[in-house]
Image 1 (spheres, helix red, strand yellow):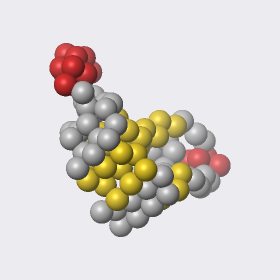
Image 2 (cartoon, rainbow, N blue to C red):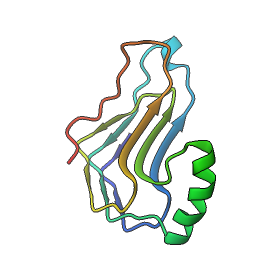
Image 3 (spheres, rainbow, N blue to C red):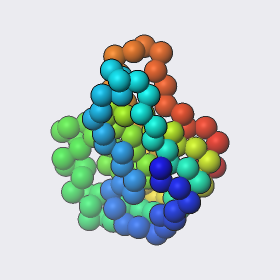
Length: 110
């Protein structure tokens, strides 16, 4: 659980990235939470943005985001304060799944 933290005024392509490979689809639900955090005022440095354009156009990857979910592990991202981030996405989710009815809980973020 990542609870009640502040991620403020950082310069990076992403601020928080959950990139997890797990066996949660096989073994059942594995609990993971990102709750009541402040993710505000973050940005990607211009030199990084220009360098990322060359690479990311070839690989179809997003250049910048505040919170990213990637891999097999589902993370509950709830009740966080987001905003003022000068990045391409506030929240970006690309979860791999074998089940058609899977979803990621990202309710009540402001």
